[in-house]
Image (cartoon, rainbow, N blue to C red; front, top):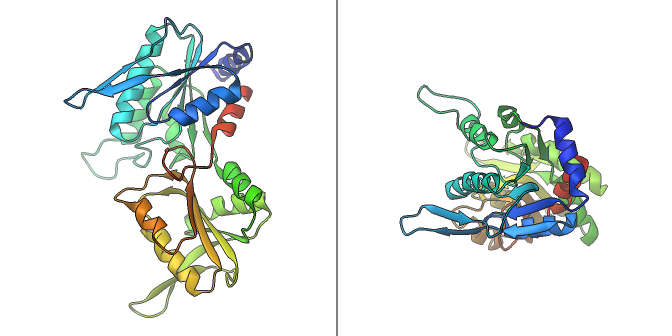
Length: 305
């Protein structure tokens, strides 16, 4: 595996046009934008599924005898298999080095065994990805400690900058909130970058059966609120929080997350709720992924892991 110094050498070579970005099926738009920002060659993998569901992928290029960056999610499972196959393909085509850009890292939640008989899922996936990787870049990975399972250089990037930039350019936000204490650091990061006050939502027990959610300190009456989180899956917490913020007098409530997983029609329920806006980063590409993390990935590839 490359040492950190070798990883920096790999990046330096990119400036003379020797880097190639390969886009997997899950991250086409992000990969194209990344290649454009870096001013390097782009190759889209041709990936299909056989009738039985097995993955087939091919890279239509005579050779890849340069430093290669593969941009591909490892969620859901089919995308993880595609990443394994893409690694093998570019290696066979002569890649000098392989850096994986994994915008959304699947299986990052189980980084330890909780019950006898369970696998250490994060470790299993990391070790297999590590076999043909000279560097790994992730974005707001759920548990950064997972990256310790890799032997190659790694970097987890924070989407707070792109989110703050997006809303700063458009204006209109008064307060940045986290949905809970655990995400307070993210709200603080975004709020500080925007020059706006920040807080987190806490549960306040009204009675033995009633619980309300409200900001720990800040009064939201008449304010335009931005809720920030790393992952939105079902959206239930955000919808409930929005309803109560509106009851507290908030003028508007917008939510932005890094990873819009949006399972079980969550996006439809969010857009049909009292929320005034729903946005996410393009780590997972969908109809509301308007905040790009390509610039921070490009900066990292330029400066080295």
